[in-house]
Length: 252
Ligand SMILES: NC(=O)c1ccc[n+]([C@@H]2O[C@H](COP(=O)([O-])OP(=O)(O)OC[C@H]3O[C@@H](n4cnc5c(N)ncnc54)[C@H](OP(=O)(O)O)[C@@H]3O)[C@@H](O)[C@H]2O)c1
Image (cartoon, rainbow, N blue to C red; front, side, top):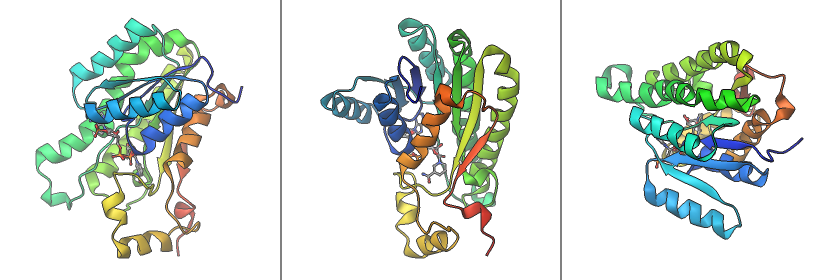
């Protein structure tokens, strides 16, 4: 049971960082995977790379910000699988600014992709998750959902909203055989954080707050996502697993 054999999984934002690590780990564990991203070239390159390694996954160009693209996802699942066992709402962005410097368009974009999109994607895929009878949804939140970690207020708002979305949907959809959990990472080495982590002073500040004295790797998140996706975690729902090297238990 420590695998994802015969499971059908959708992962949003699958070409880079945490999403890409999830695609790789799910394939190794035996799942069939469909992943999304906006950049078609990245999708084609990753798909080719996977094929060379002997894996087959489908990449779909779909922008989580657009409702027609969210529906395209559901249409793909309807045409190809007719049911869905695993949904990873991973696609996310950040725009870091002081609260008063955001334009309305900027902060609404952060909320639309990080908070509204997981809700809408979960809703359009609900009939297929229900059809599974034993489905698992995993939302990628953040340490910023719980503490101020200097990410900017809209990102923090979006991720804390995503945690409550996780708990509320877990309660509502339990009767449909759908579990819903979240994973909240602290700093992980991905293209999203690369520029930020290159600043020596910032890195020093991060390490001084992190008992394990390092930032995380994408595979340290995909491992948790995989466990939550498996039937091995069948009694876990509505939870948030924090992966932060101990940051949240350290005050001084
Ligand atoms: N890295 C960290 O330290 C960290 C910490 C806490 C939480 N997180 C969360 O973890 C998730 C993944 O972060 P990451 O660091 O792996 O990010 P990343 O390196 O920037 O990768 C993001 C992935 O999502 C895709 N994506 C972005 N916007 C999208 C959209 N509108 N529609 C569809 N796909 C989209 C990107 O491809 P395209 O650009 O081609 O669309 C890419 O494949 C995010 O939700 C992030 O908030 C990350």
